[in-house]
Structures are given as C-alpha cells and as structure tokens.
Image (cartoon, rainbow, N blue to C red; front, side, top):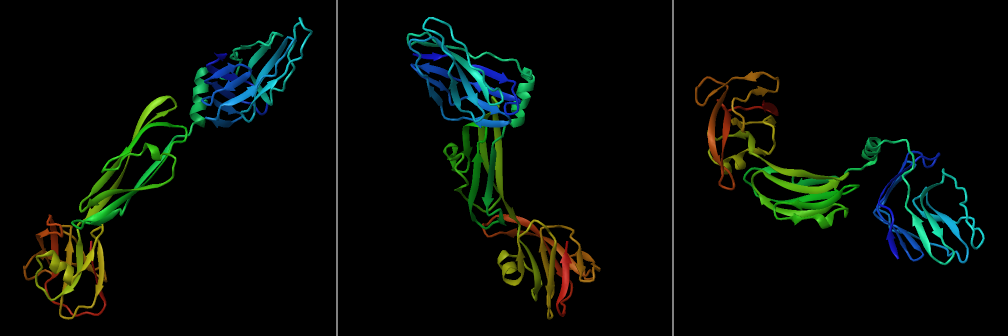
Length: 347
C-alpha cells in the first residue's frame, strides 16, 4: 500500500540543535512496511540546510500480536528514524516512549493493530515561534542564488583586424532550479552544462565590437526569474606615434610601416624618440588633442600648413585593414627635429 500522508510544512520549536528548525515535507509514503520521505523535501535543522537529499527510507518492525504505537523522527542530520513504542498486552493499548526534542523532531505516528496492519497519523503542524511571513523571510536569508559568469577572449583588439573569439562560461545553480540556459552567436542551449565547471565555446570571428549574450531562466524561491549576462569584445581604432621624414601620410600601410601602432581605448600616448632631421608624428582618434613636450610645455597646435604653429592638425578618412573606414586626426611637427631621447605626449 502506498499512502501519501503528508504534503506540507512542519515548523518545530526545539532545543539547542533544533532551534529555529523548518522542515518542508513534500512526500511521505508508506509501502508495506517501508516508510519513505521524498527526496524533494527540504530541511533546515539547527541552522544547517539539507536540500534535495536522496529518498530516506526505514523499515517498520512488525508488531504481532501486540498493539503498538511508534514515533517517526527526523534526526539532526536529516536521517529518519523509528522510535519503537512500549507495547501493551495483546488486546491492550500502548504508549509512546519519551524522546529528546534537542536531538529529534517528530514527523508522524505509526499505529500497529496487532494483526500485521499499520496506519500512519499525518504530521501535525506544531506550535512554533515563526509566523508565515517570518518563515518566508528565513527562507530568503538561507537561500543561495545561482552564480553565472561569461568572459570573452580576447577582450579587445584592433578595429578592422579579424580576431577569432572564444568564451569561458560557468553556471552554478545553487538553490535555483534552471529551466533554460542559452548563449547566442551559434552556441545554443547550455542547460546540460550547468554545474559542470567552466566551459569553453567558440563564438566566431569579429573585426568590430561583438557582444555575446547568455540568457538564463530559472525558479528562485518559487518565483520564475530570468537573467541575462553578456561579454563584449571591444575594438579600438589604431593610433600611431613616432618620427618620419614623410611630410604627409594617407594610408594605413604608410602609418604601419613608419610609426609605432597603439591599440588602446585612451587617446593619451607618451612617446620617446631621437629624431634625426625627422618630423614628430601622432595619429590620433581624438580631435583637438593637446601635445606636450617632456617638460610639460604645451605645444601650439594649428591648422595644417599654417606656417606658424608648432604642430599641424588635420582629419583623414582612413581605410582600415578590412576595408572599413574611420576618421582619424593627423598631428605633425611643423619642422623636422634632431633630438636625443626626447619625449612628446599627446592627450
């Protein structure tokens, strides 16, 4: 016989070990002489959380021909035990043994009729120190949310240069119950990879900014929840600095061949050089940048070819390596210079 005798919540006020205990019983069945407490039950005993254990089963000792009552107890580690009652005579009543409420909490009573039949008395909601609202607040305090991370490699690159991209992702469910988990850019569902450590996946190639989105759906404390996490590959317009005898530069190839390339978010470049009858060059993604020498003296920047400014400035539509175009700004000293390990800075 299978008898589902209890679905509910027992909140037990006990002593030292069972102080503030909460027991959520999701399935309690009797099959023949085997009593089983479902693996879906969640127990918080003395501040220790026991979640999703395996089914806990105990075998009931027969009582023939005596009438007897036994206690079904949950111990402080979440194990189920039967405390045998004191039997009476063949046709007489029996009584229960005392038990230590600091070590056990009662979840049911088993009654033997003396003819090999047993019945169970459903658990009783015992008096406790928590209101329903307090109970929910306590669950919220002990509930552990899922942890999910996604990181893209490389994290940045040069605009116009194609990079192969991979992601590392890790999803730990904790107390959340996941119903869906997926990553775009060709990865698809990753529901099977939850709680399996860090995973690596390819997300194709990019020469411009690329964002990879991880979409999660789960039940958190009985509430359906969604969460999105993302990782972005950033690309920066190449910038250049150095010295050259060239009076002008108009192509990416010229700049790459004659100057040092900088791939960075900032427009600030500090460049030490020893020009020998060469021009000082900066090619920046910033308009109206300031140029300073190593003594922090501000250099006057004017219109290209004005004949008076220390540095000239003009804009240029530059074709990058992938044939896309961007606007950059050229800064070149008016005169050639001959210096030894001299520093200029653009910012």
